[in-house]
Amino acid sequence: MKKKKILFVCLGNICRSPLAEALFLQALSDAGAEDLFEVDSCGTNGQHDGEEADPRTRNNAASHGISIDHRSRKITPMDLDYFDLVLVMDENNRRTVELLCTTSQQRLKIKKLRAFDPLFPMDDVGDPWFGGEAGFELTYHILQENTALWVQRLLPYPR
Image (cartoon, rainbow, N blue to C red; front, top):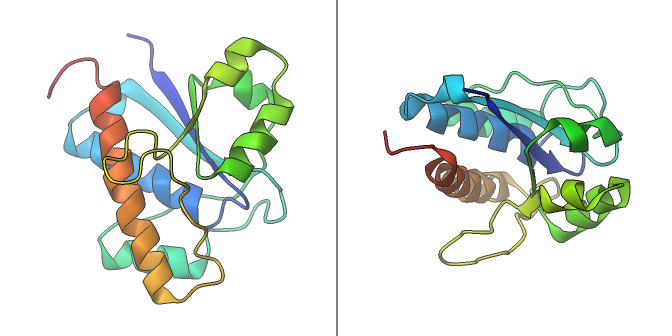
């Protein structure tokens, strides 16, 4: 079976998207389905290329038993051909990624991460960069809930 390729996108690829990637991988592992997916994350601005995730994100994730081993990178037009699904954190990310699209097939791959959020469907995942620990904790819970929803929707059969 061909692996489904999922890409998470935020602004700098140091807070939200690397955490979403790690949480998605954890949900896949919990479901025994990590062999069915290829997962990555990136940012739209490239300002932090090559950097580790923000220490506040890594510390918050570690407090929940989640390890983030990722180096930031900027999204490329090739990503839009390679990945099957591009999950963006907010409306600004969506618009920026859409500007890279050259085909309608690429545009159809772009979805907001909170597309299926039962309480706040289609809402943005706010950037915790300027907030304190509470903002990073809130982001963690939003991403944990929504990545689990995506895993449930994407699994080919219940596990």
